[in-house]
Image 1 (cartoon, rainbow, N blue to C red):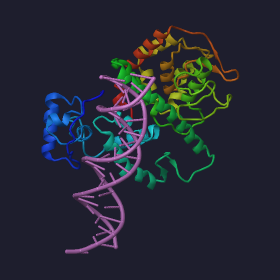
Image 2 (tube, rainbow, N blue to C red; image 1 turned 135 degrees about the vertical axis):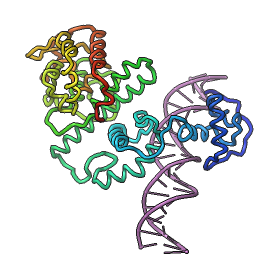
Image 3 (tube, rainbow, N blue to C red; image 1 turned 45 degrees about the vertical axis):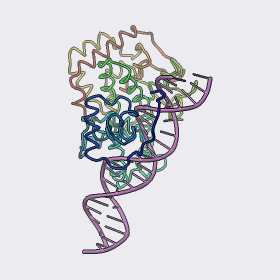
Image 4 (cartoon, chains in turn orange, brown, red; image 1 turned 60 degrees about the horizontal axis):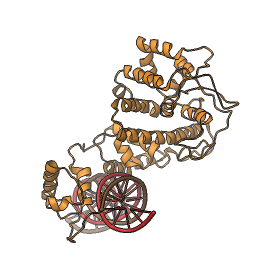
Amino acid sequence: MGKPNDNAKVELKKGPWTREEDQKLLAYIEEHGHGSWRSLPAKAGLQRCGKSCRLRWTNYLRPDIKRGKFSPHEEKTIIRLHALLGNRWSAIAAHLPKRTDNEIKNYWNTRLKKRLTRMGIDPATHKPKNNPGGSAQSRHAADLSHMAQWETARLEAEARLARESKDSKLLFNLRFLNKVAVAPAPPQPVAPPCLDVLKVWQATVGPKRFFSSPGSLESPTSTLNFSSNSVTVPTVGSVMANNVIMNSYGASDVMEKINSCEEVKGKMENSLQLHDDNNLAYPVDHDYDMMMGSMGLAAVNHHSEGDNMVGGVVGEFEDAKNYWNELLNLVSSPMESLEF
DNA sequence: AATGATGCCAACCGCCAATCA
DNA sequence: ATGATTGGCGGTTGGCATCAT
């Protein structure tokens, strides 16, 4: 980037690309890489603006693009991600390998949106159109909606990590956690654990990166408020012990995998030192707190009356990270085995 | 067969954040 | 600090294909 020494005004071509133009662009990029898009057209012998070249490359010519019909799995993924992210096509595309944001956007606008509308679902809100009011179902939908908003923030953090971090192991773990978090929630009375852990987080560490103002429990996009006594926060111990939250988020298969692994169970017992009274605290740092929140694991035991954290720190932060990394790495092939 | 409606998708447009001189 | 420029993003458009009348 920077200031170029811009130059001659050439009559730039618009409209559909010809085969010859495609070949020129492909040949140039294959040999030199695209470099500065601004200067590429002249070097490649194209009478197009750099922007047009970039678009043609990213949306059509790039070799790692998958074209053609979207699979049912891809459709489902788009719908769910749209519910979480809204019209943030590039973010959605990041979760659909080989699909471009433009393609996903077109597919949504021309097909999926209409299909949802026909099904009586508002494609903007992903809620039933004719069910206003306060039914349990709609309240549950509202819970999901707010979870979705938090998921949005978390997905952004994941995307940031993916860009900034070369630590593929951590990224793997984040993605694994993402699958757990995005799994559909059946109707049930348990409050959303994402919100629980954030409540605890707020009470414990106060507003940080994701909070817009001190003392408020707001997502970047939400103005949701909570009554302080309405939420029961499970502990790591209780969750690990009975899978309540994990099951409530359709992630029982994850716990099944974990429980079926003797090594993992041993690590759990040793590291967490489960207590019947659930008065277990767990070391917290913010990113891991978020992750555990996404999994439905409150990082600390929480007594709602005082919004105070109860219990002491069990270990060091690094221990917690290592523990979760080890735990998650022991679960075989989560990406393939978990329905998303 | 002709015409209009609809579907689809590549490409363009305008905006914005990041970057650089 | 400032202004120019780039790259990226989401919204929109234009044109071709298909369908319905």
